[in-house]
Image (cartoon, rainbow, N blue to C red; front, side, top):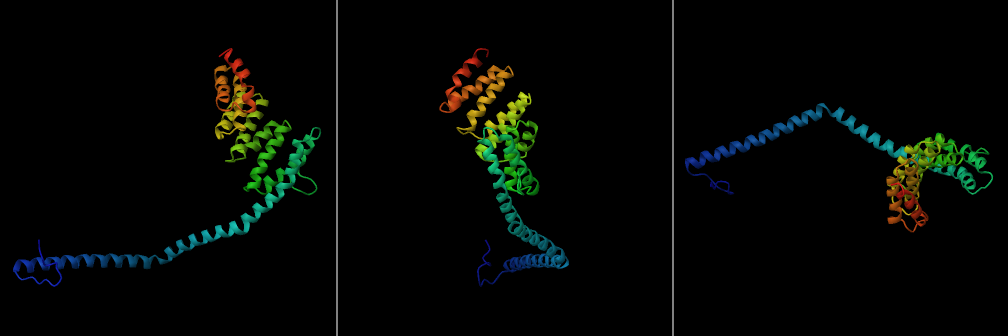
Length: 255
């Protein structure tokens, strides 16, 4: 191994001098290449600086624009929409608890009154907000309760939520509408979607039971039995669980 790399080393023999010179030459070439590469990079940056600055400017404007939109447009819009939603929601809640004026109260919830927005106005005027999304759910449920099943399907399909209960109820509501329209196969598909959306003690046994009854009506007692058996195995303490043995008996009778 050569020793000339040590600090202060001076080559003495002819071979050491030659090897030392070769190392010096190689090192010079490396630094020359680096300098040349840096010069090319600097030249490219210099030639394209307007383009680079333009890209940076577009990105900066986009970020600032998004922040400004979110702060000065989206947030106030969300707040206004949420405030507007309060009024029709009162009519909706009253309709659910009314024995004689359901339809008229649901219509007030949908169309508004006294200069106040209804669910349909909020959906149109505040499209894309959380309040408009929630208005789609309430409008769909209002139409379902009014026996306007196609309208119920249309609005509930426009609603989306990761919430365990609301998301399942919306899908199950579409299933109910399809059942009323005489389309059990479509209904069963949405009941399955409601079951798959989340597992909880409220919506899951409810739609397992509806799915089982629908499968029975379609003549598939074996499939119906699987729904009822799951209620018995996993949700025996639910309202549906207390009556599930009767459904299991009916499904087994022809399965």
